Length: 267
Ligand code: T3D
Image 1 (cartoon, protein in one colour):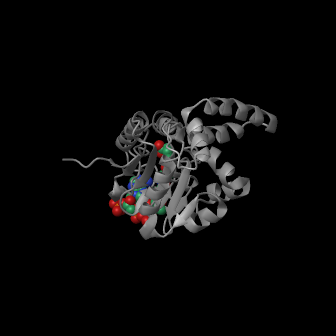
Image 2 (image 1 turned 60 degrees about the vertical axis):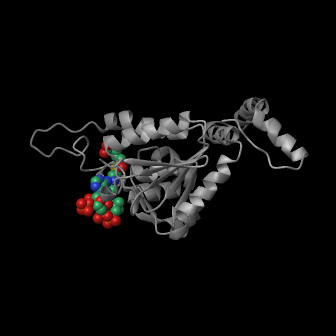
Image 3 (image 1 turned 135 degrees about the vertical axis):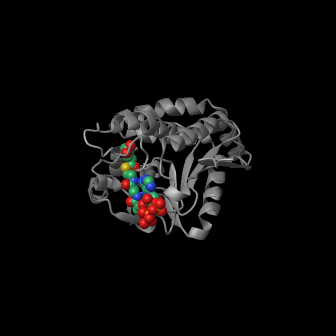
């Protein structure tokens, strides 16, 4: 039997998706794209899932596009037409990025090793990024004559400011996880041995929270990035009106008044 390219495991309300091409550092082929997107679609549709963790098997998180994939690797034979990378992005990377950013539950990246190119920005597009101390982030694109993709041009300056974004994107140096945490590129860096335990604990904590409000928070922060202060204030009122009419808000306030732990159920 062939190994799945994405290994899906469930523990309570947390679903973990592990990229599984360790020999090629979990780099993206069309097959991996298809399985990851399908797993995310299934998690989004499953009301028992309240948080998703994305990680990698083996020593890497993801080395970005598989540069040996004949669908994208340049054809060096004389007269061969260039590959249409715009098409690759439109058909594979853009749907993946949008799926993650629009998940109805929080998404945690547990970065277990090197995250390069599209692999780095796949992680950075998640809601919280936890990384093993030995992990690293590489904006590898300029080394092969490309620009940051998989959301990198949008994410990097917003996460770390233009000066650091330009340094990371132009130079493409390896950024150790501890430096990524210090710069504000990721949420936390933890000891290698405890990464998956910490990721599971974080995901369980998120899963027990009002996930509808967590997702609305992600959406509101993203929307506010393109608004002025007054527009953001107005947008907060719109979002709060919706959440204020949801069961989780009633449960949260009632539990506070009754001095008990809330049980949230909206999704
Ligand atoms: O469609 C499009 O192209 C547009 C979209 C582009 C999105 C992108 O992601 S562009 C950026 C693509 N990724 C890279 O440029 C990273 C390439 N990899 C590396 O620079 C290094 O492998 C790492 C820094 C990630 C890790 O270095 P190291 O020394 O720890 O490992 P290694 O020895 O280089 O790699 C181990 C194996 O994985 C090796 O295979 P082998 O020799 O053992 O058979 C290597 O070829 C393979 N591998 C690593 N990265 C890729 C890869 N194979 C295919 N594609 C890769 N991206």
